Length: 386
Ligand SMILES: [Zn+2]
Ligand SMILES: [Zn+2]
Ligand SMILES: [Zn+2]
Image (cartoon, rainbow, N blue to C red; front, side, top):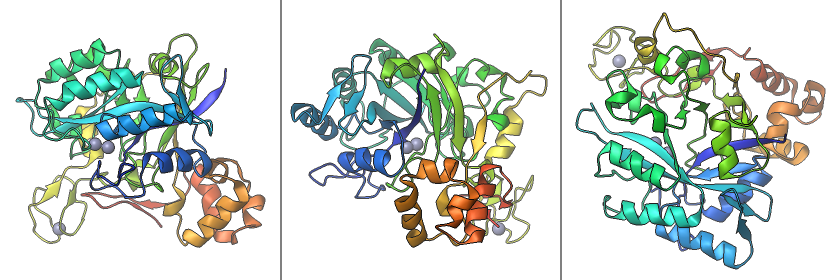
């Protein structure tokens, strides 16, 4: 059965006519740029556009079909001429009454028609349907029901981050405080966590973990992704893989070492000192503390829970984190090896050395085995490779 590289959380910065969708995202993040860049530069096979509910994005997709630049495939999804398959997604913000704060969820639908219906339904419950990740004024179980009615997939986004993660900010200890567990199709791990850290949460034992980039710029596409075994690139096949049916399954997750993530350790928001259990920063005495994903996961994990067998999570250090690897060197590497998948995973030390100096070649090879030493991140500041 074939294997595909998949990143399902990519935002749209601007529509074709220049209107903002995700306001904070890069202007170059347009639909056609994403389709091109993901395939040619990043080497991905399937991408999820997480702002597909936006009416102008739906129109652009329809125009692609009319111009025969793309076609809807029978199992759901849109196949572009360059060979990449697009899944239609929408990220939402919800804030149930019993929660400490708002958080994000991801939804995916098989067809443009289903996404159109969802968008129409959503437009009566958000302030501005054209924009990304809008707060939905509706009960969480009603949203879940609507997604299921349209044969969609429902996946909490970056579930453990202290800002906008369902476990990080929403619920006290269980997803059942807001959702029906049986209608959750997966959990997006997010940057500061990985399979090993999350595997101690007993209520997630039967739910697949996915790892996506949450890209706000072209460069960030493919920062996290997964390799999936499935018969063909389509929505239905992806749904089977999430539920480990008919031999379809996620083979590996690839993502940042969690220590490189922005919210790994509980830290001071002013000076970024890791504060551990302290509620006041011992360094600058600030009381503005952001809880770390690591510490939150320790609270949520059940020490008696028998860890389930899961696909390996491969720590990958994106090329931008490699010390001294600037944009010029990156272009040289891409020109030589075709796309980033080849640089990150395939090229041998001696092949790399033909293009870049020895320390960089060595760092790329070491990044594959987790042997680079890392200073952990926290309170919004990324970790660093030493
Ligand atoms: Zn989000
Ligand atoms: Zn997002
Ligand atoms: Zn401080």
